Length: 412
Image 1 (spheres, one colour):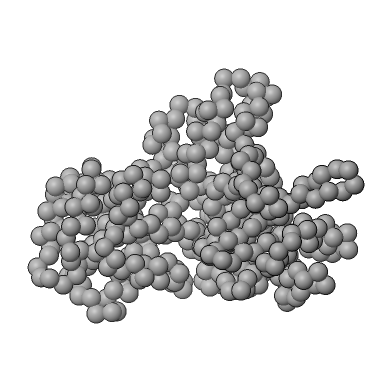
Image 2: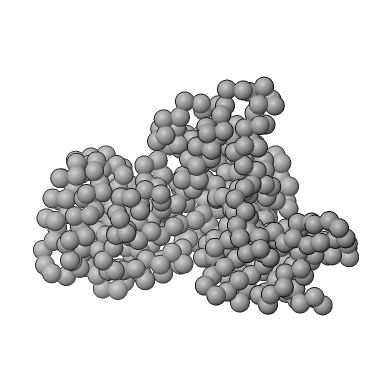
């Protein structure tokens, strides 16, 4: 099998090399954090002339390294490896296994010739912890599952089959190794239960696993739709489950967000230039995991490709909101949706996602919100069809989904 190179993330590591901060690789479990640091980053260091004995690597989940779970032993071991004034690169995998790891890492910041890189499991080492634990001295690199372009690079079949596989089973790196549908389905189903849910329960001392399970299924069923904790709580109550509070649902949603399993997207009023607090949309970090939760049912393509486009925009570094455009029709006010508003610096894009523009009525429907935005930023409709990009008479660019996913510079 061809190597998954993760070029974008390697570049992010290279750009942060020796910047005086702890480099912290975060992301959903099994998305390839460990592999990014070793062998990908380690091999890069070796090719640039770094000596092997100046790369200190410890996998703290390895039973042979059990002694280094003691913070004093870990610190002593690392410092004992330093024999000269050249830079030493420290790679620590699953750092959360170490007691009081925060103080150990903060101590390394005072050693001038140490450049430190760590990964951590979501169960105890979350993005939201980084600000607290390192007080601005940690530099986060968020790793996502494979994009379609990364997936296709190592996939052995044609583009159409590759996309259908990606739509169904997602982009966790292990997916490209598994050969049968049965293996893929079992891996994703077991992974969700024995790793993700187990982590969340242990970290947050959850008592109602039944509620957590059903909540995940509710969010999986409603990707691309507006919802919030209040609406979900009312659904439980209407189904006769009256011992679940809105605070419980809100907390459980936050646990899923902190574990990188789902992402929450806010609504933005384009004309009013303000955020609308609730409800929100939720998308899954990996579609394969989402599909596994629903036993590979509810495979509405329009919602799935919307989720894929959202994830792709995040990987490309955009801040992403969902948009609302208010218009007046006669005496009534009406809110139109823009699937995504993407911002990066002074750049902005308005994006609609749909299966196709097969009729004039469908085209008018998808265009309507975009043509009611009175600014000069680029407006785009992404369709599932394989087409060459073109611009219609309204100045809206139409892009095929695979072209959008395989050409990371296409928005520019």
